[in-house]
Length: 626
Image (cartoon, rainbow, N blue to C red; front, side, top):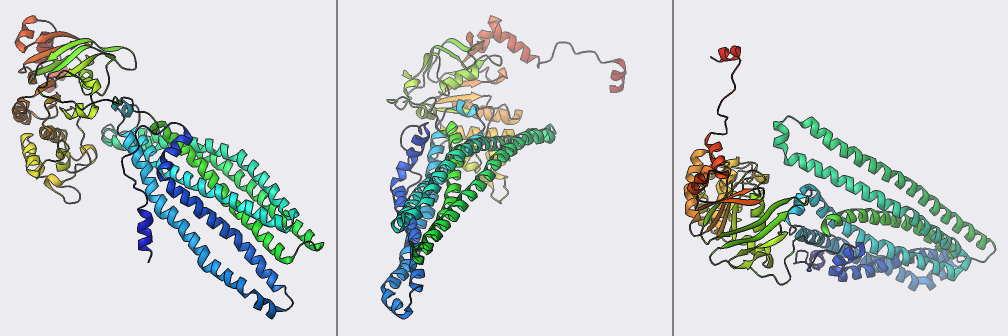
C-alpha cells in the first residue's frame, strides 16, 4: 500500500547531479540558500504540511471544548440529536483529515527530504572539496576534512528542516490560539500574549550562547576525530616506535578539552530547561486563574474554559519542543559554521574561465624564466630556463631541497609559478585545464599509496576503459602479475580481485610500487615522470623493471628523479640543480669530465656513502669480535 507513496516521495530530489558552478558562498544565510534553493519545492511543501499539522493540533482543543459544552446540556437526548452533524465532522477530522495531514508531513520529512537532501549537501561538499588544490590537503587533516563534509550535510538538513517546522509551527499555533481565546474573551488571551513576550526574551538570551558553545564543542569534536584518524593512519609507526602511551596522551588532551566544552554546554542546557519550565508553569497558572475569575463572574462558558486550558497546555508542550528545536538549530548552526571554514573555500588554483584542454602532439617541454617560493618566501627555484626536446629522457639531480620535486610539481600544476611559464608543445599550461595537463603526464612516485580497492581497480585507475587483458599485460610489464596471483584478502577474494587495504597496507612497499608502475603503464601518457620509481624494489626486481621501463620510455618525453645516480646515468641528458638553479647540464660522461657538482656526487655514491677510513675499534671490542 505504502510502497508507491514511498517511491514517489523518495524520487523527488536527485541528490548526486552535478552541482551548480562555483564554490558554496561563505556567508551563513547564503550558504544555506545555496542548497535549499535546489530543493525549494520540497521546503515549500513542508511549509504547507506544517501549516496543516499546526492547524489540526489547534482544532483538537476546540473540539474538546465543544464536547464538554455538549455534556453540560440539560436535555442530553436532544443535545445529541441536534449535534450529530458536528460529531460526524469531528469523526471525519480525527480519523481522516488529521491523519492525512500527518502522513503528508511525515512523507515529506522522512522520505523526501531526510535521505535525499542530506546526500545532496554531502555530495556537493565532497565534489567541491575533492577539487581543491594539493596544498589545501597538505594544510589540514584528512580526518577533519572528511568529518566536516559528513557532519555539515546532516547539520544543515537538521537545522533547515527544524527551522521550517519550529518557527512556522509556533507562529501558526500561537497566533491561532491567541485569536481563538481573544474571540471568546480578550482577557483570556492576555496570559498567552505575556508568555509570548517572555518566550521571545528567553530565546534571545539562550540561543546565541548555545550557538557559541555548540561551535566550540563541534570544533573540539573535529580535533578529536583528526587526532584519532592521524594515529590510526600511522599505526605502523606507532607500533615500530612502541609509542601507544604517547598517542594516548596526544588523544587524551583533546578528549579532555572536548569534555570541558560539552560540560559548559550542558550547564547552559540545564538553565535553559529550568527557565522554560517556569515560563510554561506561569502560563498554565495564569490562564487557569483568568479563566476561573471570568467563569466566577459568569463572563465565560464552561466550553470555552475547557478549550482554553488544553490550548495553553499545548502551547507549553509545543514551546518545549520548539525550544529544543531552536536550540538544535543553533547547535547545528555551529557545526555548519565550522564546516564552512573548510567547505566554503574557493578553489585555490581554479582553471581560467576560458581554459582549454591541453593537446600533446610531440611532448616538448619548456621552462621559461621560472621562479617559485612557498609561503615562507624563500626562493625554491630561481630563473629556470630549460628545454626538454620531444622524446628526450632527462634526469634531475641534486641534493635534498635543490628544487627537483618542486619543478615537477609545477609541471603538474600543483602550484603556479611566481614568475615565468611552462609550455608543453607551445601551450602555456596555466591557460589549460589542470585535469587535461595531468591526463597527459604519467607519474610514479617514491611514496606510493593505493586506493582501498581491488588490485585490478588500482591498476585500471590509469585507464578506466581498459580490458582485463590490458590490465594483466600492464601487471606483467611491471613485474607484478606473479605476486598478484598469490594474493588473497580477508573475504577470500584472490588475484586481481583481492583488496589492498587502506593506502595499500596489505602489500609490501615493493609490491605497491609495482602496482603503481602498472597503473602508469596502462595510462600510457606521452610525458612520463619517474620520482624514485624503483627505490622500494630489491635489486633483482629493479633490474627487470628497469628493462621494462626502457621500453615504456620509447617515444615519450621522460623526466626521472633518482638519488641513486646509477639508475639515471644512461639517460640522454642530466640536469643538476643546486639551491634552486641549474648549475650543470650534459650527459653522464660530459658531467664527469667537468669535475664539479655531478662528479662530486658520483664519487660520493661510488664510495657507498662510507668515509675513506673507518673508525678504529677499541682493542677489547676488536678482540671479542675476532
